Each structure stands twice: as C-alpha cells, then as structure tokens.
Length: 168
Image (tube, rainbow, N blue to C red; front, side, top):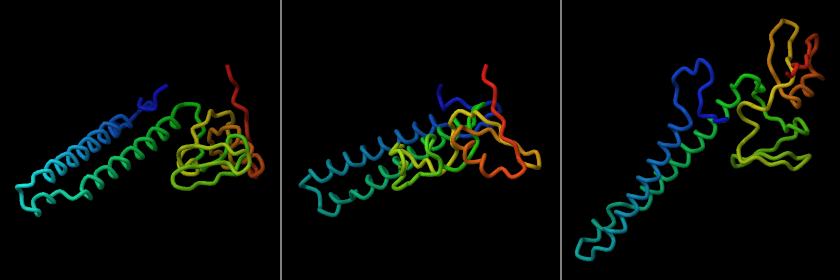
C-alpha cells in the first residue's frame, strides 16, 4: 500500500512523491554548489574574494531546505495514508497500546509507558491506525477511530455511542 496514491476524490494537490523529487533536486543543487565552491577555492590565480564567492552557508541552507521538504513529504504521506477508508480519523496523538502517554521532542515520539518509539512526531497530525470503532456523539456526528482512541473516547462520550465496526 503506497501513501503516494491519492484517496478517492484526491483534489490534485501535491503528492509525497512530488515533494521527494523536489527534495532530491534541492539536495543535488546543494552538492553542485559545494563542488563549485571547492573548485573556486582550488584556483590559486583568482583573487581571494572570488575564491570565496560561494560561502558554505549557501549549500548548507539549500541542504537544510531539502531536509525540510523531506519532512513535509513524510508528513503528507502520513496524512494521505490516514485518509484511506477504514483508517482512524482522530487528529491527536496516542500510543496504540497505552493511550495518551506520548512524549515528543525533535520531531520524534515515544510512549512513556511501554517505550514504543516513532521516527516522527506522532502527537501531531492524523492517527492512521486501522479503525475498529465508529464513535457517535449525542448530536449524531460520527468518526472512525482505532482501538486506542476508542478506549479513550469510551470514557468521555457523554450521551454518545461507540460501536464496533464489523470485519468481514
């Protein structure tokens, strides 16, 4: 299953694949600039000002931009995957085993209770786990949620229902 495939009604927005391609082009540009800077610096007959015409900060800044584009691609892929039919639609982080026990730092998450780790900030964005419950509030609004979000909601659905989604 690929998160690059747009769910039904996709809307024509950017895809994770397009962002990864842009990331690769930016990383290539950073490498090219670094190579040109090194070639300029090896030319002793040029004035020092010309040899230093491409400071290292240029390729460093482009490489940082490439990394940020990659982070955006990963986030978009998770959002797309969470939009697939049958995925949990909750947009708050939760450990699939323990519940609301997540910690996040530097773009990574872990569970304080069981020690599970994720290489992204699971506390932000869609859950995307397999939906097992249909949660309905007292006004009739419904969402599909995973087992962990269902356990959390079960204690908080005042006047609502939590229905198991039958599996075939």
